[in-house]
Image (tube, rainbow, N blue to C red):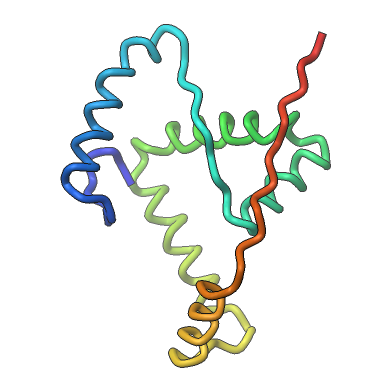
Length: 130
């Protein structure tokens, strides 16, 4: 998805305006000094990233995000490749041999997840190297 394509947005119009204004305000400073922000990864992505770090593919999660965002930026002008990746991902989901869930079972699982107490997120502490 390119920056110009619409996306589902759960924010209020006021939230969107505030975020756009913040992006515009920070743009010049970020163009000189970069941008630092917090990222929350849901459990599946968190495990995948930490496995890559544990295997030595990346030094830490921030390097993984840096590299992956760079790859996404490189793919942005190639809509045909992005469509093919999406097509293959959808086909893989359709070809998945595991049994699918009924709507009722899915809703039951989602309700249970919402109502269950949440485990506190793990926090990566960046090590200062000499």
